[in-house]
Image 1: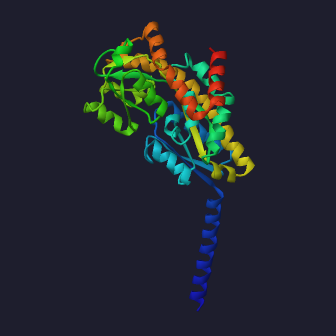
Image 2: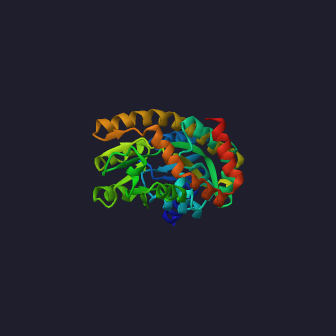
Image 3: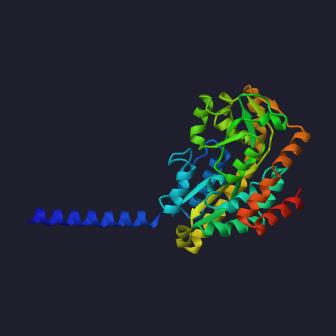
Length: 334
């Protein structure tokens, strides 16, 4: 009887301790964040800054679990996971949200930006605010923008230095209607494809080429399966971090401030890293054997003229207010 009493006491104590541990565990807010960028990409490095900042600012009561490099699936899957609440946040190229939020196409107009400073000035302006409203209507909340960078064409067929060189090239693009329309307008055959399938498609000759910022060409090793590179700078691209809006709104005011301020710091860090990485990547790609052909000014003007109608098409999809704001602020910062 005495043994049973002692045993019951020990079990009760264990339950109390267990409940205590459960309570302590449940007091910690765990935030799962998915991404499809490689672990050594500047955005993934910046997201570690975000995780560290949240940990520090919350005194350990909030923990970030990062899943870069497509650990939880491709970009489109990550978007679906955030919308369903399976993960709380994702950082992705804006093209992967453009079908859901076509307003994002307003900052993907062809040959619009001539510098990163101009591009960032546009996305940090009222343009970003208008896009944020559109995201909210789809149950997503923006936590700001990083730089993905100017996009450039690579291929295995020929150097690109004039408009006619695009003719018939099978080029992979992101799933963005404006991107696809742009490459059709210059005579290429664009193919929308997830980046997870791209290397093998290039290796097997299913595609002739692709377009990405210099840094992505290095981190994804596309230099191994592509020969020619040109500084087409046809789009300037952004990375957006989005959260499930209902989840974010459900955090306390203090927790929301921690998340937003930590993300602001991560965005600042990434933008600085991106400048260094982009310059270094172009040098590295040439060292690795890619043939680099700069685009002449007359070719760039011909490309702008060939794609002028794309702007009107986007305007029809997203409205005058947003397109006019993009064009005005881009011109003010030219």
